[in-house]
Image 1 (cartoon, rainbow, N blue to C red):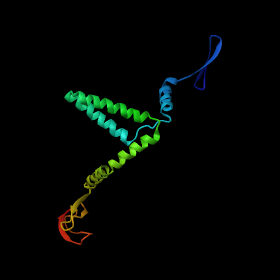
Image 2 (cartoon, helix red, strand yellow):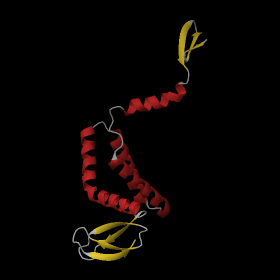
Image 3 (cartoon, rainbow, N blue to C red):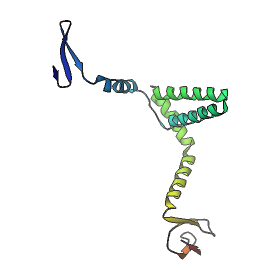
Image 4 (cartoon, rainbow, N blue to C red):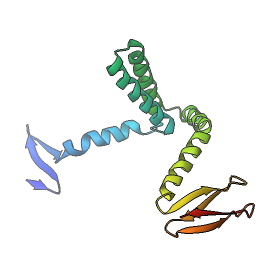
Length: 157
């Protein structure tokens, strides 16, 4: 008899209850239980996985033993960090990584923002003070006044 997603039956004279569909949720639940209390993935571990991928790719192309050993070492260290239960040490490592890459990440974000703005705006530089000025596209030839030094110059938008 089937009742409420459970199978009730008798086996060897004992009542048994089996959950239907335990194959669907069993591995997922086991993985969630396994990861409870562990540090998990952060920005530094994603960076290490990316470097590992590049090392493996170049190892396949160049057949360099050093790159293969380096890739395996990075992969083992990355998974050690992900499965670690020492949250304070892993958090500190991630913070050092984030502080060390803050300027590069800020520069990359600014470049991404500029490329997105170029669709609707021209970005000009004032010839006098080097201030960046954003002008909307499609306005023809216009006189641009720098908000910083008040210098006027003509540009095509």
